[in-house]
Image 1 (cartoon, rainbow, N blue to C red):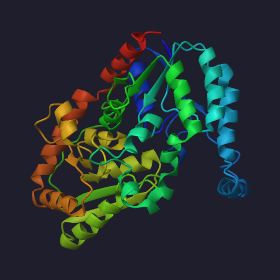
Image 2: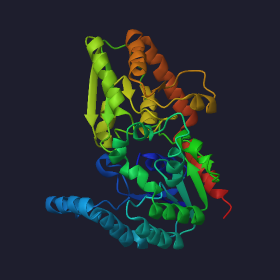
Image 3: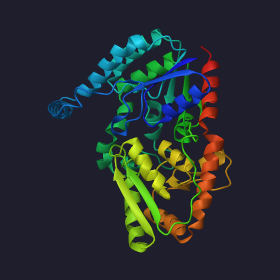
Image 4: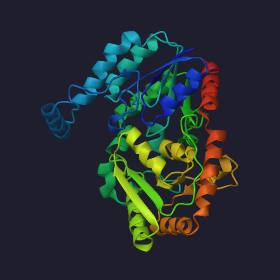
Amino acid sequence: MRILLVGEFSRLHNSLKEGLTALGHEVHIVGTGDDFKKYPVDFSISSTLVSHNALLRFCNRVTKKLLRLDFEAYERAFRFRKLLPKLKDYDVVQLINSNAIETYPKTAERLYKKLFAQNKKKFLLVCGDETPIVDVLLKNNLKYSVLTPYFENPDNKKYYHYTLNYANPKQRKLFDFLQANCDGLFASDLDYKIPLEQTGFDFTFIPNPINTDKLEFIPMEIPSKIIIFHGINKYSAVKKGSSIFLEALAKIESKYSDKVEIKIVNSLPYDEYQKHIRSAHIILDQIYSFDQGYNALEAMALGKVVFTGAETEFQKYYQLSDTVAINALPDVESIVKQLSFLIENPEELALIGKQARQFIEKEHYFITIAEKYLEGWNTSNN
């Protein structure tokens, strides 16, 4: 099969491509590489004219603020339109998000119509902010979610422009268009599966693919100093609970200065971020989640102890009796208590790391997940 994957925000599509390629399929990714993360793509639609010129960048910031016009979004659409003659005759096209092209909704709809017309089956993947997800989260009927900081403090609304944008009429119209015109809808983890179950949409749940062949597991030895790492994302720090982690780390540093080394970085490219992950023992990934995001899964594959979403719903779904990740609650003292236990009982690090790797191999192996996508694409009704 020839498969086109549109958009890349986490390395999900890259790992899926690796699994599909291993199974003998021809796969291409078109996308921006997601800003500072710089994920690999086969066809780039990243802004070059605006983003690489200081004067144009400044002008774009002004027009975005005063006129709500983003020339980078127009440039991405222009670059995608120029690529359209190459993006044809695929058996499957999968969008990673309704905003996979990262442009304006009306423009995206026109481009999707052209893309769909020259290819066969079309699918939409829900693996991040999306209209039906935001609709459910705005009801505030879950124990917590990425919107919890917004509900707790309305001043945080400024950090949620991107997320709340999915609830506006234009973005909703785009999602409705895709839902009506795609042959199937997929969800990638429980943080999207659980809300989608409240919507009545027909969808297929397929866990994230993780290429464990590339992520070497090295059993953790008890270190003289435990390295605790937290990587801050400038766009999602509030949603991921970074302030809670930072407050907990300050207490841990004061309490265990002779036993820990704390590393905090901000908005690194993916390859640099991975270097820090590999050198650490404990990773503080995110709060306000039921399941693990992509960075957490890759760290778990490396045998790291990851503070992330590992709620009872997650334990129940995968029928787990062993600890494979630390459920990071939105409570500073809870984080401090869990970290303190691991620092005082370092033998637990190796055990949890080993169990984390085994879990990833069992539930997220990239070739097995690629086979599940193939089954989903092949058995779609249209």
